[in-house]
Length: 326
Picture 1 (tube, rainbow, N blue to C red):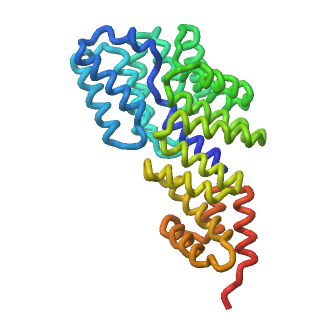
Picture 2 (tube, rainbow, N blue to C red; picture 1 turned 60 degrees about the horizontal axis):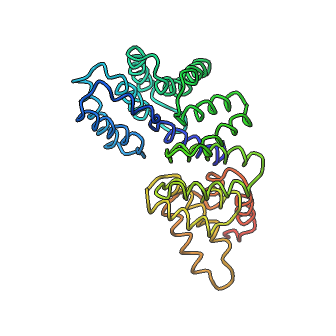
Picture 3 (spheres, rainbow, N blue to C red; picture 1 turned 90 degrees about the vertical axis):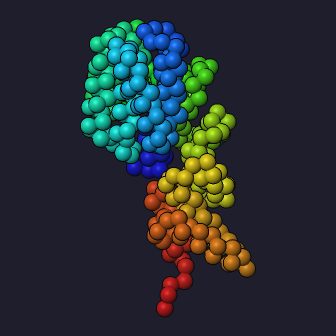
């Protein structure tokens, strides 16, 4: 699996659980004002989660507190399902089966209490997709569409299913519809942009890809992964190590995470072989920093990060033609 696919799979995981839609406003019925505030805060915490266990725990406490006094409040069961999904994330599309089973239990309760909630069917479609139950996912999403909702995640999760069915162009239309919708859900827009990036990258339309990356950064300037993913594109597709280094540093300045660290190491190694003449001291500094971030030879690090592309070819050529120890 190449770098772009790996990043987008991870982004799918972190982005696809965002809050439902404006329909939530009508679903506060059945709880008092204090619990309504707690519910909104729990949703916000789940939406903003970037891997911190404390954020998930805080959301769980709020949701369980609501359900102790209002056990029939269906939206809280739906949000608890989202909590279970997030706690089960391992990497890529791998999840703890027990966490997905717990999420299904919460969703079943939400559907029992309110079978006409489009937003609950949207979350169910996402869960079934993660369980590789494509037919069930498609049915749940179709039900959500039939009921009606302005939830942008309906289009995104429907696109997930279409991609699994090799209907990439149809999925791209749905992603674009989210970008053009005017929704204030920045996270949904960013994930839709991820889908468009993957689509146009596959077509080799790199100028379009780059413009979407820049839109993504403008859309969510606080999101570390937006800078990190663009850094990966700059290094692996454009072979622009200097610009890649700058964007990986921006990403790590916001959040410390392995993909950005590995990307920075790869970009530093790539930059080191571009240093000319009497600049050897600068190259040694780049190599020393890269080694502090990632084990392996320079060519290995770049190859493992990018998978392929011009930066990998350049590093392999540099290693082949470098002086060998006597």
